[in-house]
Length: 171
Image (cartoon, rainbow, N blue to C red; front, side):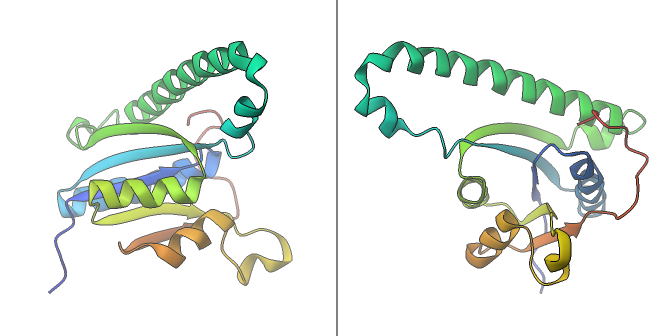
């Protein structure tokens, strides 16, 4: 028997095409009477805490960095909430299915895996950024890393080749 889908984790990188993937999350939520949890991870691997330990005079830099992070998190959450409201403006019942929006910092694949595990999501929905000549041979690096280690079913949605009806900047 296939387990019931109750929690959908939609991981977005905020690109224009990731809005296209959101529609798959919405469709799945409707069909399975499930809730949607939105996750965006800001890749902060280049900004290591080790630098701050090596350079103690940069304590003010750490403070400014934290303030900037908090501001960025607020802006991204607002942007995602507004996007969901616009995308589902004619469907308030489905909009209520969007129950959480998280913005985290770190390695995107690691954070997606952590959230999927911690929240005990039933399915993960994310896009694929296959690029160039190798597009058909390899998935995007984040999708590939997630697939190698996740224990949850994953829907990898290839981005459309042409334009969609989503206006740039809506997500």
